[in-house]
Amino acid sequence: MEAPASIQDKNLDTPDETREFVDKGKMDVVSLGGEVTVGRGIFEPG
Image (cartoon, rainbow, N blue to C red; front, top):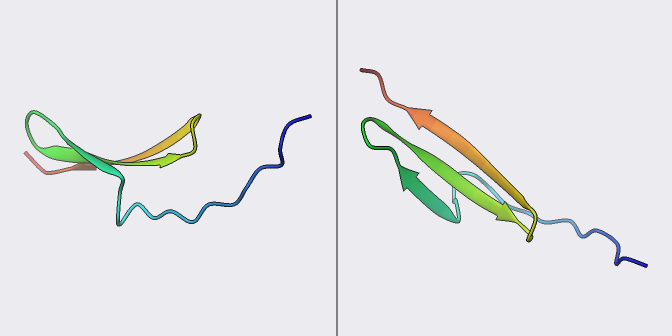
């Protein structure tokens, strides 16, 4: 039997990692345990 899921409090305003794009923009990444990763792409004009 698997352990019950736990609640995690994470925020994309304080990401675990920020990945810069080659041109204009970045990706903020938050890891929620071993199997789930959430990202937010921020694209600059041009």
